[in-house]
Every structure is written in C-alpha cells, then in structure tokens.
Amino acid sequence: MKAQEAFCVRCGSADTRVIRLDQSSADGDCLRCDQPFHATPCQNCGGFRIDGSFGVPGARFENLPKSVKCWDCGHRNPLRDPGPE
Image (tube, rainbow, N blue to C red):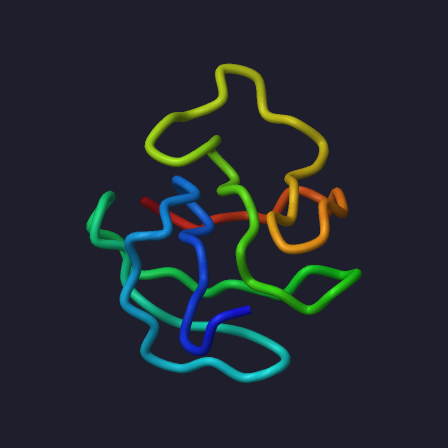
C-alpha cells in the first residue's frame, strides 16, 4: 500500500485526499463524489484499496453485493455502510 492511499468507501474512487491514516481506519475526502469518508481496512491484508459500497470506481451497484474486493490482496470483505450521502 502506498502511504496515504485509500479508496472512497462510497464510489470506490482512488481520487481521494486522505486526512488521517492509521492501521485501524482512514479518514478523508473523495474528489470524485465530493463526500467525506471513514474507511476500515481489509480484514486480510490491512489495505485500504477496497471497492466502494455503491460499486466500482465512479459507478453504483443496482443490487448491493454481500462483499467488496480488496485490490491489494483480492480478499472479499463484507459490504461496509458508507454513511449518509
């Protein structure tokens, strides 16, 4: 994982500005959907490059999946609540 890198938990975009990052969470702002986010790490590798809860970068799922993919290790993590829009 690159330092200060986390995908938006809403849209999955990598276009984010990370304000705070530690081993247990990441806080930042998404430049694509213009929303703040609070990300939790992958349960397998601890990375923060995980598909967004609403879909792949820039898109939304019509039917929410049960899990989202970590792009660092491929592990499927339970879907996270992105919070209010």
